[in-house]
Image (cartoon, rainbow, N blue to C red; front, side):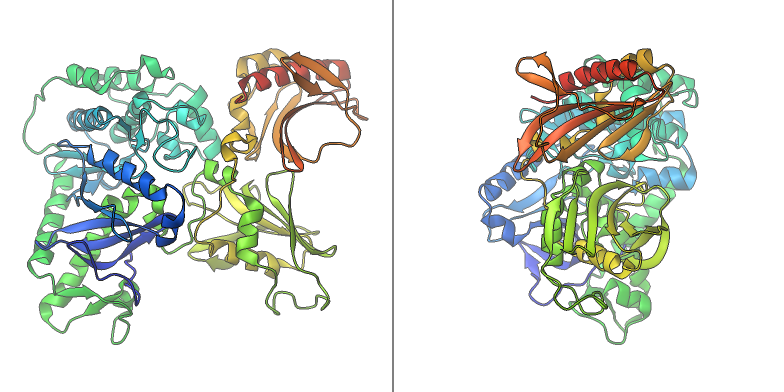
Length: 629
C-alpha cells in the first residue's frame, strides 16, 4: 500500500502519537499512521472537521468510541486511546503483528482441519467478547481476521453496531458488510442480531477450509441470491469440520449456535504449539523481525510533507525521504512491508471511513446498497456546478443555459443543458456489455459500451463487484468527452450524498428479495437458479412467461388508472395495455415530492392476457405484503 505524505497544515502530532502519514480517507474522516512514545505503531482515526457542525455528530462519535472500548478479549484488536472532546475527535487502535487470513490462504492454500478448529475457537471467543459488549461486528470476513503467532485476531470495530440499537451507531439505516460473507438478514437489509455474525463466521470457516467462499458468485446479485436462497455445498469441507460449520449457515437466525455453544462443542485443543502451517508462521516471524528493526531505529525513514526531491521513483510514490545512512535504505523495504500489514490492520479496519485499498480514489459507494441510496441529482449538482470547460463543450452554441437536473425513473438523474445536450446519470447500473475504453480516473478504469445513438461510460466502484457501476450516458454518440468529464467530477466529490429519506424509500430495497420463488414457480413453471440482472432496482424471472419486478420513481399519471382494492387503504393500479402479451400491475408506495415511488410487476409471454394479469396481480399482492410499512 502507498502512504500519502502529510500536507502543509496537517497535524504532526495527535495526542501522544507522532503522525507519519495518511493511510486512507473517506467521506466521514481519515485514518492516519502514528507512532507512540515507545515506538509502537497505531492507526489513528480522525473525524473530518466539517462534520462536527452537524447536529449530534460529536455525541454519535462519543457513543461509537464508548461502544468500541467496551470490547476486550484475547482475540480482538481493541481501541487503546481516544479524545472525543478535542477540536477534532480521534481514536487509536492496536496494531497486530499478523498475516490476513485471506492472504495466508491465497499464498499457502486452505488451512488443515486442526488449524480451522483453532481459528473457530479464537473467533468464537472474539465474538463472545463483542456480543457481551452489546455489539454486533457486521463485517466478519477473511480480510478482517489476522493470524498472529498465538491465534487469530478480529479487527474492524469501526462499523460495529449496538445490538440494542438496530439503527446503529453509524449513519441511520446504513447497511454495511462484505457481500460474500453477509448473513441472509444483511443481504435483505433486515434487522440484525448477534446470530448474523455467526453466519458470517460459518462462511469464513468454509473459506479457510476450502479456499473458497460458499456463496460467492461472479456477480453481486447472484452472491446475495445464494446467501438468501441457496443451501451451501459443503462437500469440499473436511468431514470432521462439517458438523461445526453447517449449523452456523442455517438461514434461520434463531437456529444458529451461539459463540458459547461453539466453544462447548470445540472443547479444549488437542494439539498445542504454533497453530498455523509453518509457512504462515515464517511470514509472521519475518514481519516481527522487520517491525523490531523499524522500532529500534525510528528515524531511519521519515514520512515528510511534500518530500519529493532526490527520491527514487518508489520512494516518491510512498512519500518517504531516503536518508544517506545505509540503515535507512535497508529499512525502506521494511517500512513498505509494514504498510502492507497496516493496510489490513488499520486502513481496512474503518471501512465506513474510506476503504484503504482505494485510498487514492474518491470514495465512490462500494456496496450495492450504498449505490442504491445515493442522491443522484445532489451528487451531480455538487460535482458539476453550472458550467463546463471549453474543451468539453467545444462545438456547442454559446447560449447554452445552465444545467438543470431532475430525477429519472431508474433513481438516477437527468441532466440537461439544452434539448440537444443532455445525459443520464445512474449510480447503480448493471454493466452488461461494458469494456475498458482507455482513460483511468483516480486509479479506476473507465469502461464503456459501443452505441450508435449515445455515449455510455462508467466507473466500477470496486474490483470485487465489477458488474455494478456508476454510469453516465451522453445523449449524443460524439460526446464521450462530456461523459468522461462528468465521471471525473463525480469521482472528486469527497462525500457521496445519501437520499435524505432513504430509510423510507423503495430505492434501498432488493427487488429480487421481494419475490416468493415457490409462488412464482407455481405461476410460470420451472425457474432458473437466479434471476436475470437488469438493474439494481429490477428483477427479471424467466419461465413459461417473463416476470419483471421494478422499483421506480415516476410522475403520477394525469388520468387515474383503474384500481384494484387490496384492503387497508391500499390499491393496485391496473393500467390498460395495448399489447395482449403484456400485463402490468402497479402499487403506489408513497409520494416523494413531485414524484411517486411505485412497484411495477410486469408479465410478458403469449397472448393470454387474462392469465398474465392474474399472475401480475398475484405477484404484486405478495410483493406489497413484504414492503416496509
